[in-house]
Image 1 (tube, helix red, strand yellow):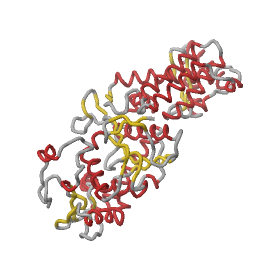
Image 2: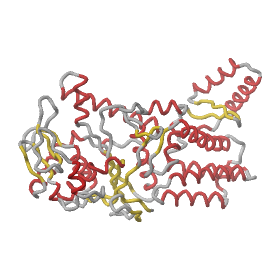
Image 3: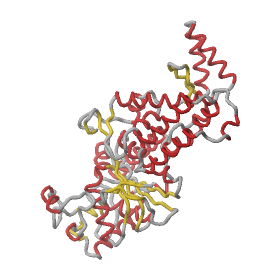
Length: 464
């Protein structure tokens, strides 16, 4: 397998530090608002990477939750009441919203131990980390604040490929900051009235944003780990600062840096100020409530590239997904020999399986991997042998698990009674007896199934 490493700006063979173990850390959500589709693209990219790695390795995947932050505090102020309690209420509510969004898309949740909260690791994890930086001379205290001294870290700017002189031109000292250099960044912020705060050797306060990831990633994955992931927008300053903090503290830190492209809406960067903020609920409504359509939309573009959310692109993803599902469904519900799966797979199917794995090994090339699934459908329809169609559908199911697709479809093989009901509904529709047809649809709905009418005939799928 090869992964593009942002740190070296090259495609590199993936060699874990301690195989067969693989350790991966991803910057998670700042929980101050409902998640948007960009957050879910990020979660899905790394879920797919984790699934693919798990074919050959034992993966430990950690994703933090930022539950204390300027944005959370500002939202809490807007809601009123005691600020510290309001901050906790805000972060709890929006973390739940994030988890619900993951559930809607069928993205695997992490165990609580693999999704650490920043507030649970301020003392002593972050304060000890900051103390180490002070002892090593990489940081300094200033009236209750603690700053990282950027110019004392020789490699600063390597990840983002920026020179210090270039960074200096855009740097500034905000009112109230005690920086010795505009490039320096906060490790610890002195407490302000009413804000959440913790005790520390420098007085009451709270951690800066960047320190939490350096501290928590090394706590849970060790001083050196395999993969650090996030969006391109995190390369600078967040990830650049993480490297500086960790290595200045004597920790090797991440070997591979994996960054995904951003989500745009009709060609513009998604943002609240532009009014193009797409929630998960809105996106699901746009594609008929089917989460796998959104997944196909994500998979159709390489993870490192930007992806544009538009009605045309969603329609293309929906059409592609329907073709995959229709074939899968029809094979499952055809009268085929049950022993067909035990027969050897035909060469076209084996070749497509190999192509899928090669594509995923090539820096997670999901457009090529998705094309291999398209090829399985074509090969299945082209085969004159029903057993080959069954084998093609089983390979689709197996490979689809790596992409998180087709969940629940295996359980939609219809009973004889359901087949008969479906035939009755078709007859009722032909005779324009729509009330009878709707009653049959309601019967399926009560069983957790939905009927979708396609040009090739009705398809029964699990309700999303």
